[in-house]
Image (tube, rainbow, N blue to C red):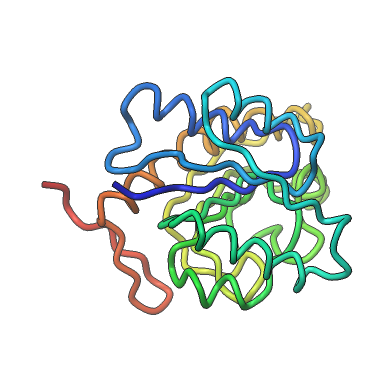
Length: 210
C-alpha cells in the first residue's frame, strides 16, 4: 500500500476528488496518509480533517526562502514514510532537494494542456485568462510528474475540454475541474500506486493491469 501525501495551499477541490475516490475504493493500492498545507487557514485542511486524514502545516511565511520550506517538507515527508507526493493546488515552486528525494514520485495537476499556458506565473485563474486571451477552442488539464522545470515533467494523462464562446476565466476553470482535473488526478494516482506507470525519457507508459 502506497502512502500518499497531498500538498495544498487553498480550498482543496482536487484533494476532495482524491478523498471521494478513496471513499469509493478507486485509489487502488494507495492510501491518503497526510495533507500538508502551506497555509494554516487553507480550507483543504478542513476537508482532510472531515475525512480523518492527518494534517500538517508547513507555513511558507515561516521560512525565508522556498529552499528552506522545501527542506522542511522533504524531512516531514520522509519521516511519514510517504511513497507518492501529490501537488493539488500547491502554490509554491519546490526546489531540487524534494525532487531528488522523490524521483518520479511527485505528481502535479495543471489546468491546461501542457505545453500550452504553463510555466512560471501560470497558475489558478491566470491559466484560463491566458487561454481565453489566445482564443483557443480547446483547453483542458494535464497530470504530470514533477521535475526541475516548472510544469516540465513527463506527462501522465491529459484530457481536452471545449472552450465556449461566452466563457469567463471562472466558468472555464469550473468546467475544466469538473470534466478533467477531478477525473484525471485520482486515475493517475491509482495508476502510480498500482505500479503501472513506467517513465522512459519524456514518455510515461501505462502498463496493463493484472
